[in-house]
Image (cartoon, rainbow, N blue to C red; front, side, top):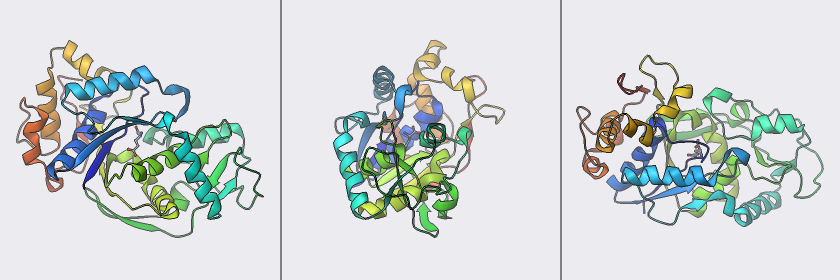
Amino acid sequence: MTTGRFAPSPTGVLHLGNLRTALASWLSARAAGGRWLIRMEDVDGPRCRRDLGEAQLRDLAALGLVSDAPVVWQSERDADYRAALAALHGAGRLYPCACTRKDLQLLASAPHAEDGLRPYPGRCRGRAWEGFDQALRFQLPDGAVAWEDRLLGLQADDPVVLTGDPLLFRRDGCFAYHLAVVADDGAQGVTEVVRGADLRPVTATQIRLQEALGLPRPAYAHLGLVAAPDGSRLGKRAGALGVEALAGRGIALPEILGWLGWSLGCLERPEACAAEDLIGAFAWSRVPEGEVRVPAAWA
Ligand code: GLU
């Protein structure tokens, strides 16, 4: 069965860019008669907060986007991540990394365009195994990975060049983003991943990890980002583009949905509607590939 998901990190308010991704993943799953799940990606250290996650869930529900199964919180899934690490170790694909804490912090956060990509050069490859309480990296095989993006078409990336061997476990005891995403998509039976284009460059790395864990490869669609009216990055302005802030300025939920639906190719012009109204008109062939700009009156 088609299973889509939206996987926000609970580090702030969902802005129009996040909401557009959420709606696209929901519409894609619903248009295929499938189910849709929400997963809270709160493994990534102190910036993640339960209350922010709860607020995100409320905003999504206000838009009509409700998970078809209980929301999964990554912070509660240590046992599964440990099992995935054990499987990778058994396959000889993990090595301990002794690079400094500062290096690890830079490399461990969920990647976003602002951070840029810092491929790990494989400095600790070949280090002797010392147990599971070390920082652990996944040894990528050589070569490019080809994959089909529903929006961007055929992609071919070399993960060794883009990310290098990804960190899966940190010395501070936290599981890292790539491991959690891949293990969870597998465990939840996710068949399609819809997310922002800022994560396109890590897709090949995650596919390599899926292969090593014997997990099926989901379909991918990477959506263009939402920019300010002048085309610049939203940056700090994104905070003012959440459901509550917009409502405070008189922009009601149906209007937000109308703009989001229009930006995804479901409507000829932005007009107030409910999420349900958009399902029949959703098709990946109609979703514009590039970035979209927030209406000037909302920015
Ligand atoms: N949690 C990630 C983020 O908020 C998304 C991960 C994914 O969709 O694969 O950027």
